Image 1 (tube, helix red, strand yellow):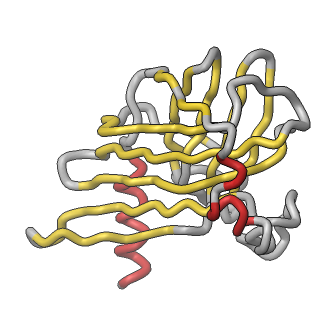
Image 2 (cartoon, rainbow, N blue to C red):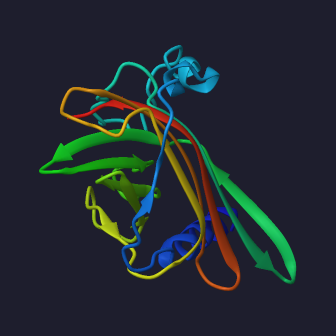
Length: 186
């Protein structure tokens, strides 16, 4: 019963957390790599979210907590996830930062697109086929902030970041996604 409730909450959280592309300016903090949380990531091994997963990094790439709040019988409930990983790739003139906890069957997270000193966040849809990534089309952003260590990017650079992102799925479910990440741009 609890697993069923958890799965339904996860689906509700992600079903509608997106709106039309809305690029906003991000903040550059060249000292981000010396943040205590960023430093701690290097002390832990990367998460392995399913048995036959190929782990791309030896060290942990993200510490992000997502909290989903919802109402059940007029009482607010929350559920949290903290098993996120980071990957980044640079294609054409856009940096794509994927913060996801995909377990091979479904995932929950965000894709951050960085272009021309601005960013846009897309929410990952958990209703997918094995190893497929889809994005939700409609959501309402309540607040979003992105801090990166640089505003110029190229392949093989290390990137460090912080995200604080809130959206409403509907009038009953809210998503808060906050934490630090680091990885090498592919």
